[in-house]
Length: 314
Image 1 (spheres, rainbow, N blue to C red):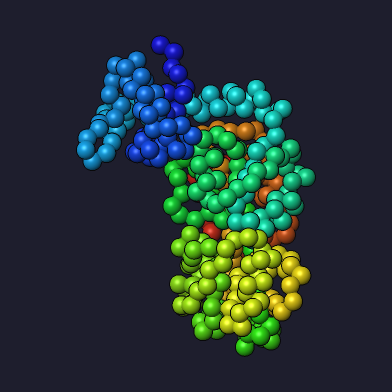
Image 2 (cartoon, rainbow, N blue to C red):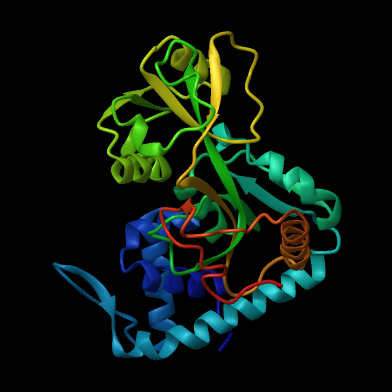
């Protein structure tokens, strides 16, 4: 029998999520469409792929047997498509974490990476969904758990983070600051802190109890609010240029220096042939500019660097 790859893809995504609604969302179809595709595949195979009960779904014995070869079939199909059109289509790359200017890093590797088409990412969750659905080929930003099992990542850059304070802040004149000295200050965040993993982990680690939330209308708007708060501060990668806002000062953080981790993210199981070139360009630039230096006695990361989480390009 000839397999319908849309049906196979629906099965694999549902097997990974064990939730038809979430699986449908990652594929950009309705739950009804996904359910029909799986039901049709089960009919053609003559085997139940899922056990369904009032508590949800789980893989049936036939589904467990089918999962690995189904993934291999999809990977082979994706590789065939990439081989046919990859030379003509640019690598589609999205970014997230816009306040921290991820394009600064991508711009430095773009000339070595080949033809790139850049997107307009929102956050890790939405970019992950775009990768899983095949709408983009790669993404760049800060990766943190939980990460979908169908995605892999490689650490690209560890960037020192400064504190940006109002000149009226009692610590603004210091040449450098230990993070714990900011405990009596107010941490400003461009959104709800529980959705901003790095800032949330920093606040928890260094005992920052007072927080203020801004609407994310861009870096200039955000830092203008910080400048008006004589007790407030924000965190920003050290080489992000400050907008022309009076009353701001950037102070290095030391002992330890917080590091913001940038990673390249992609979908496992095949992809655009240009992905290897992008990964190689990132690795080359990181080696020349010592982007991946990390000393646990001197630096702080929410998670220790692990490089590539699963096998991938390069």
